[in-house]
Amino acid sequence: MIQSMTGYGKSVLQLPTKKVTVEIKSLNSKNLDLNVRVPSYYREKELEVRKELASQLVRGKVDFSIFVEMTADETSTTVNRGVVSEYIQQLKNVVQTGSSDDVELLKMAVRMPDALKTEREELDENEWKEINAHVLKALEDIIQYRIDEAESLEADFILRIENIQKHLDEVRSMDEDRIEQVKIRLQKAISDLKVEVDANRFEQELIYYLEKLDINEEKVRLANHLDYFLTQLATPDSNGKKLGFIVQEIGREINTIGSKANYAPMQKSVIQMKNELEKIKEQILNVL
Image 1 (cartoon, one colour):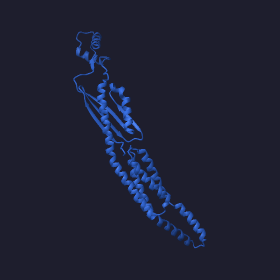
Image 2: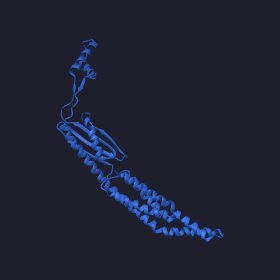
Image 3: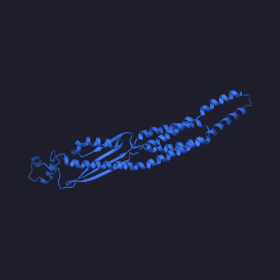
Image 4: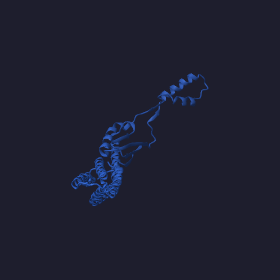
C-alpha cells in the first residue's frame, strides 16, 4: 500500500498551567528534510523526537512544532528588585535634583541589563511523558492522512497503467500491417526508380531494414514493466523511489517503440502512451 508524502497531524494537550499543541506537516521531497521547533526547556528531548519522526515518516519535507500557551496566572519572569532599586538610586545621583520623577526613573531602570530575570523552567519527566503520547498521536494522524491521500493516487496509477496497456494492445494489433506497409513503400520506391534490381539482394536488404524496425522485444519488456509496476503498487510497503525507477524503464521502452514505429497510426498510440505516462510521473513524485 502506497503512502503520500503530503500529510498533516495535530494533537492538543491541556495541562494545569499550560496548553501544549503538537503539530506535524509534511510535503514531498527526495529525502527526509526535518525541521523541528520546540521550546527551550524541551530541547534535551529534541534528538529523541527527531529519531521517532525519521523512523515513522521516512521521507518528505517535515515541519514539527510544539507550541506552549500559558493558561495559569503565573510567569517565570520577575522584576529583579535589588538591581532596579540600585539603578534608580544611581539615576537620582546623576540627576542630582530633588524634583526628579520616580516613575520616569523606574521606566529607565527596567530597561537596564538584568532588571528582569527569567527562571529557566526545568523539564518535568512526567509532563514530557504526556506530551510524548500526544507526539505519537499526531504521528498516527499524519500517517493516516498520508494513507488516505494515497488512495486516490493509487486509483489514478492503476487507471493510467491500464490505459497504457490498452494502447500497447493497439500497437500489437497494427504491427503486422505496419511491416506490410513498409514493404509496399520500399517496393514502390524501387519501381519508381525504373531500374533493374536483383530480387535476392533486395530481399536481403529488406530483411536487414525490417530487423531495425522490429519492436517485439520492446513490446515484451513494456508489458513486463507495466505488470511489475502494478505488482509493486500492491505490496504492503510504500516505495515511491522504486516505482519511479520502473516508470523510467516504461518511458524508455515507449520511446524506443516510437522511434522504430515509422507508421503514423502506431505513432498516435505511442503519443497516447506518453501522455498517460507523463501523468504518472507528475504524481509519482508525491509517493513515499
